[in-house]
Image (cartoon, rainbow over all chains, first blue to last red):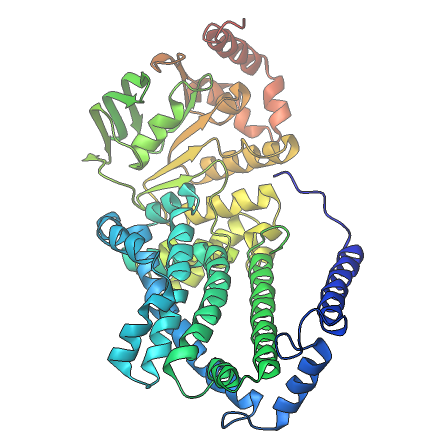
Length: 266
Length: 264
């Protein structure tokens, strides 16, 4: 596979830092030069101060870590549910053609509905209970889990399937011992996408249906025109999202190494 | 009774643009414990033969029987050794070999005993806990052979099993396979495009025509081999030096050369 010309790791890191520096300089400059008012766009130092303040001082009923913990709990619930449903279904669709034929059209139609579109039903069915946000995270995280698992199962080297059949492998064992492990690299890649979409969906859900969590904190900040609080929330969301992605990347690399696949996730 | 019987087997592939006849009126009976090697030019349908016997593919007309039964799908009575090994990368050597025995419901104690003896036979004892990607190509193919033979299958189907190995490893594997085949003969259908390999291993060599694949010639090697005492020679190069071997090789070469597609 042809590789793009890629800078060395050190250079890439330096370029990344330089990009961030320019970003923050423009952000700070906009306020200092009086281009925008501090309420309209709070400066980076104000936001950083607010972020540190929120770590220990409650806002909208809880500190930032407490809000994040509430969010992560829902998030975990939604993602785990997506895996519990998507993984077995994806494997089964990858092995049993008739099931694939039945489920694919429904799935293909539904997966283009953005998670946020389910908010009215989430509110209607679950009120302010835990089910609403979990449902919305699920609708965001489920499609990539299913697709990753399904593709992984379908793309296993045909000779491995033939070898397993020639060894007298039953359908059940084919799913658990051949398709599942064979699909793991693709499943992990799907999980990474699912984790990102799920996290985005969660914030959307919390803006509307709940009374705790990082999204809720941001809505309360918006209502009070506490723009630096909202901005601190945005940064916290970005940081946690990045941390989740880094964890999954590490998992992906570990899986690929364990399987003897060369290189690793980008 | 014949172990494998091809009766007028024909296999046609209907591609969008054209019709390809891979195998045409293929008749062959392989006896119990006979080692038959099919040799032929690329794309002559020799792999199709093996896939029909394995039950991965089915004849468009005619029949393929193994052990008196029509082949309806793959099964552990017809163990296959693939050209590119087809080992499960997520299973250790031990677990790769164990899968077929577990599927057959062999009790754990007996299973371990059989795996151990298969590992020993293929000189793999030290690699039992390794994963396939940690092994050389030759070692990987030993594992694949162990995985197939541990089931003690009625028939062993080998599809260019040494085709992906380097020349030195290939020679070692050929010598080991001869050792195994003479010590514990079983019914083998072996596919190759190497003339030397075919003559060295086979009881009978089947030469195929180019597509559509038919049988051109069947050459009995066993009687000559026993008469000339090839099996008493420890090394493949000693066998290949025998005038009887050279003569046979030239014969098969000529037969095959007629089948090469003339180059433009």
